[in-house]
Length: 266
Image (cartoon, one colour):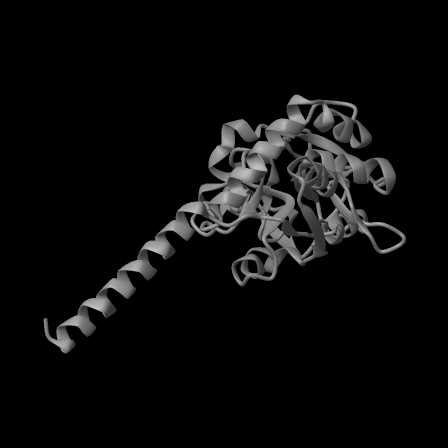
C-alpha cells in the first residue's frame, strides 16, 4: 500500500470516527443543569414584579416548582412581550414561562411543553355601558382594546374588526386597562383571570360583559398556555414535561394554584 493511500485511509478513518462520536453525542443529547426562563412581568396574577423588583406570579411559581422537581437550577428575567420569542430564538434564554398560548402560528417558530393552564377570554367595559353581549355585531363602531402580539389581539382583529369594531392595540394589558378606565375605549378583550384581577383591585370603573369560549375558537386561542422553547431543545421539552406531570401528580400544582386562584385553571 502506498504512503499516499495509507494517508488517505487514515484521514478517512479519522473523519469516520469524528462523525461517529458526533452522532453519539447527539444521540445522548444535552444534559440540562440550568434553565434560563423569561417572563413578561406585566401580566398579573400570572407574572409581575413585586415591590422589591423580583419577578413573581403563577407562571414563575409553576416554573420554579418544575425546576425543583427536575433538580435543575433556574433563573428568571423580564422581557417585553413583543420581543419575547425573538430573544428566545437568539439564545438570550432557554424557555418562556409567560402565559403563552399554544397556537399553530407560534408552533411554526417555537416548540411548547404540554399546557399548564387554560382559561377563557373575557370582555370588560365601563359600568355605564349598554353592552350586554360579546357578539361581535354589537361592537360595530365601538373601540375595543387588546394587548398587541397576543391571541386576544389576533382574535379582536380577525373577528371584531371584521364586524365593524375599531381595534386598538397596546404594549401591555395594563395600558389597555388604563385607557378603558379613562374613557378612551369602549371595551377591552383579554384573559378572564387577568381582567377579573384588575376589576377587583383597580377596575372600579368597569365591569365584565361576558366570556368568550376559547374552546370554540381554538384557531385563535390554541390548546392552553405552555412553556415555549426552541425546536431543537428536545431534551429540555422532555425534562419540563416530566416535571410538569410530576408536580400535577404529587399535589404541588394544586398548592401553587391555591396561592392565586380559588378555582381550577388547569
